[in-house]
Amino acid sequence: MRVLTIAILIIISGNIKAQKFNDLFEKGSLRIDYIHTATHNNEIISLDEFYHEPYWGGSEVNLIDTFNYGYYKFEMTDSISSKILYSRGYSTLSAEWTHTNEAKDNWRSFSESIIMPFPKKTIIVNIYKRNKQQDWEKLSSILVNPTNYMINSNQKTKIKSFKIHDSGKPSKKLDIVILAEGYTEQELQKFMKDAQRFTDTLLSWSPFNNYSNNINVWAVPTVSKESGTDIPGKGIYKNTYFDSHFYTFDTERYINTVKNVKIRDAAANAPYDQIYILVNTKKYGGAGIYNYYSICTADHPKSGFVFCHEFGHAFAGLADEYYSSDVSVENYYDLKKEPWEANITTLVDFDNKWKSSVNKDTKIPTEININGNNPLGAYEGGGYVEKGVYRPLPDCSMKSILHNKLCPVCSKAISDLLEFYSE
Image (tube, rainbow, N blue to C red):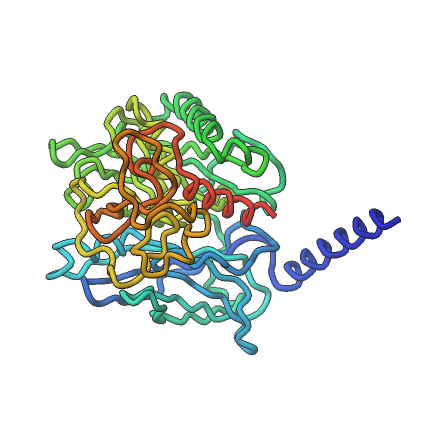
């Protein structure tokens, strides 16, 4: 009888949560496109367009972000009560650009988007920036009346999507949409095989292998006029769907695109939480930006590693743990503050990182034992910084080209988010 009672309470609780979501939101998503203009020290948000997209791929239960990750966040609030209805943290390409030398003397504009369930009542969307002190500063407030006829409900780009890994209802799963870049009409069969291959690779990595039933993967075969991608440093330019290119911020292997609107229009053909752009080239490269998108090349021998490494950035907000590479950012972390990423620390607030998982006999900071047997600790070097930033272990798939070797801290961060999205 007690078991039956508990089961009934669980069902009732689930129905209450679902009813609450249905009371607040319509079918589909609200997408807000805006222009983000910035220099090293200044930022401006300018509204571009509203869209009512056909699918909502996110949770209907976990509406409020509890992780506090990202260089930005947005909050959807009720226009009358100011109650927060939905929130998410995220990062952007523009945030990286503001740390480059170019940003010290120039303004630059980027198209960006935020996605949320479509509201039934008038809302206010507040966008915040994380400052150097790790405090949130409001950048913009946007009033949205859902009956406004200026909200575009006409889906601009209609492409048939294919579900290549099916675990069930999108609201109870992490939904990943893979977009084709640099694949011509004649190469779309290759794209579908590539998308399946990388899906299989991701689901073979720990901890994703333990959550394969919590993940859906969709493929959207966007067609390019030419095969490949731009390699500006070698004078190679191709006519591709998302106009992707290497040499982002003058780093050769950094492949990316600034065609945000085209990306979002294509992704709207499936319910999604994460966007992954797969580029049809043999050259090594990739990128992953938290709750923004991931991008990876398809045919380099190390592309399987890159696919999963970049997804660690984009999905779980994991930091790069290397510090001796030719990155193009400067002064990325304030060493007097604790970085928000789960897998690095300045030891300023180590108690709220992975300290509780460290053996009490392990010295902090932790010296590398060249003979091996290195326990979980705090090893100096990470986040592109050689001194003052620490990582959990001497090596990890977020530091080196290591297949399926995520450390316990990175694995836990991923597992926590997978459970959050699939409750």
